[in-house]
Amino acid sequence: MNTKTVKSIIDTTKEYYYVDNGDPMRGGMKDVYFSPDKSYVVAIYRDKQDANSIDRLKNIVTKYFDSFFKREGGNYYKELYSWPTDVIQENDKIGIIVPCYSKNFFFKKGYQDNDLLKGKEKDGKWFSSAKFRTGKSRLKLDKSELGNWLSYFQVCVNISRGVKRMHSAGLAHSDLSYKNVLIDPVSKKAAIIDIDGLVVPGLYPPDVIGTADFIAPEVFSTKHLPVNDPKRKLPNRLTDLHALAVLIYMYLLYRHPLRGGNYFGALDSDEEEDLLMGSKALFIEHPTDASNRNFKREYGDNEKKFYPWTDLKTTPYLITGPYLKKLFDQAFIKGLHNPKERPPAVMWEEALIKTNDLKLKCSNNSCDQQWFIYNNTKVTKCPFCGTTYKNSIPVLDFFYQFKPNIWKPENMRLVVYNNTTLHAWHVSRDVIRNEKLTSDDKLRVGYFAYHNTKWLLINERLPYLKDVTNNKIVNKGESIELIDGNKILLSNEKSGRVVTVTITN
Ligand SMILES: [Zn+2]
Image (cartoon, rainbow, N blue to C red):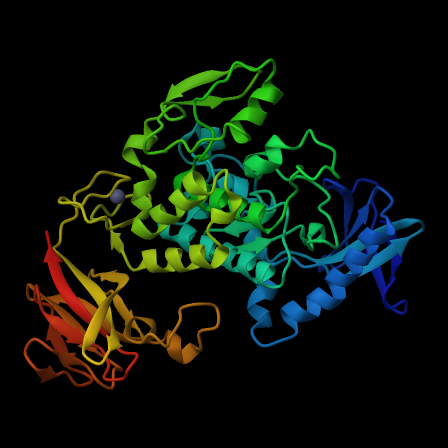
């Protein structure tokens, strides 16, 4: 074993060690070596880095590191990024020190039928395509690795928060893709990696144009132009937002939103790809233009194969619920060729979280996905296994006090099943459901139960709960029956909400 020593160029008294067995892991631009205790890696750029790049790396590990992590709430983000901590020099080469990923991001079992994947990184690609779930058995991931459908909502919340934080600091990732996001559906965590490519508008230009499936149409369609051409579009915050939308769509639906059956008869497959993902990009589920919808194309052995899009019928993007549908429309219809229209990361975060309140547990215990989103349809069925939902469904619609005694709809609802929880963020407009929630705010304040053919809301922690319809106060420890058409006031404070109850099925 050959252990080498390298020095920080920021604090030259700091030394790092790595094991060189002559066969490093090769990343896109770097050779990567483990430290002897495997707590960090030393990633050395193969090419010489110019002064600007070195300056950027220095800023990433000092100024940006401090502003992200050395403040309140910084620990939440530490888990979310694999952020470089130092810059080193070895001879004439530059490298970075990056902490090793958490154990959650390595496959415990991997494939169902063999050990070829065991111990490998959980690159997001494994979870973004149907073929690793339903394909040939040798490619099938073990069930223990997959989580259920809801796991991916939480994973996507974490990714959205990671992108939101970068953008609020004025940074862009510039190469967001399933290759640069590790995800673990079991712990529902995500880690954004390859931070060293960060783009600071006007200061540090991007190194790469991105990863094929995630490159925004405007970047694709101008990539033939010289970098200094004013018409050339390079990765930036708005192209991150395209990539984020594609990631969320793929993790929830296991298909690419733009890779449909469109075929333009270009001279070669590169040009065809440029059209499909660039100037002619079209959402496969576009409501009025079906030209990219009916078939999907697969590559392999240079063959183009066409298959019917059966899953567009059984699992259209509508199954992700109304809040996400709206954002997918904004990202893939309005904003596809109009980058400024793309939803910002915080809107994805909010829509994913609000959608969690529309979930129902599938009535089929052996359903692969376990959960689905209530969609206001006459007959409620799980889209994944087709099982009709067995119970009645109380739906609570929230209203806020606009002026004294004038209540306006909040565009927020809670779909109730046995054991649905009620939280402070349902009760009060002052509590916002994001990464800054205190542990007090996270406590449930009540829950719903189906008991003796009645739906009940049990008050656990609400100081004030009132059955408005029957003008009755419901104390802690008491319950109120949910009756179709009734109104319930959740708090007597100004920011408190009222719900109306509708019972369907
Ligand atoms: Zn099901």
